[in-house]
Length: 402
Image (cartoon, rainbow, N blue to C red; front, side):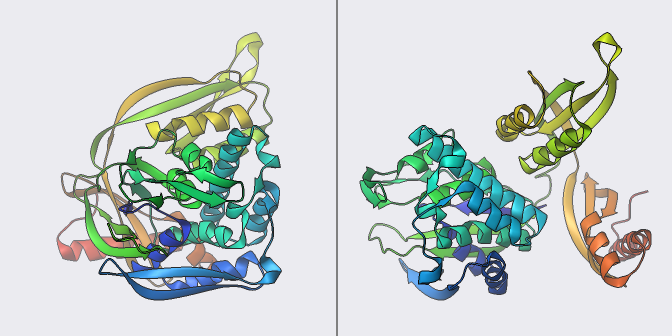
């Protein structure tokens, strides 16, 4: 499992997140492709190496010409821009989640429906690039799980569209509900609404760095210089270490029975649950009262995703109640190993217990893409990938699952 740990030493902003990912090895062409796909005229991405507090870092600036400057955008307009961009499905889904979360925060502050929220700063072209770019960058780096440190917010006041406001700005404070924040003696806005929205939407947990084999480190620079500390956001990228994803863990089980839902709506709800962070979603045919055929919809998730998954169930199904229970499960240590095949590079998901591989299977999306690209049947690509992995691991002495 690929991990990204955001060490918010001096807060976080959208451009700092982009810069940290680029400094950690993300091909900047991925960001240029995002700008092109979004179709925002006269928008360009400029990257430059800088120093902050003696640390070498990367600075990213989104330059916006007059053609893309706009006073504000509503949520439906921004979602339409994302929809028309032709992004990879996980990238588009995460970008939508971030903007929907932003809309909910702004709506709570102003007491209006999310669809009527006027996005000012976070609806500008540079904020759209920051958010979609962060999602695309994590996808390109093949990050499976995001972990974040407690987030410092700064102090004092900030001037924005609504005038002078206290730090953190109301939208930032709303986004940080339930999230651990860190004390910091620096005066100024350290965490912006855009930075808070990205991290609080994508982070699976908060705290110290998780156990992993560290592979890359990136420093994303903020624009301002602070005397007290380096104005950087650090990202640490690696692979889950031995035992970090193995053993027992607590999970939440959400389930509801449906006998009056359109099957298409149930399928859509399953998709939205996975986008909201569910680990697994499945349906079971059941017989309900009055001999009605129905379906039991079950979602398995971690505690931090339970509320978001409940929101999906209430919004996308006809249910009036959701049952919640906790359980423990035993999981294998999971890693993704890339191997070369006649159809190109394919990732293989490997499960180990006690250091021994007990399960391996090629990633479906990689195999499907290779099958389309080469015209090879999917079954053949999967067999080639598994055979190549078994041969390679046989040579290494780490025998394939039996």
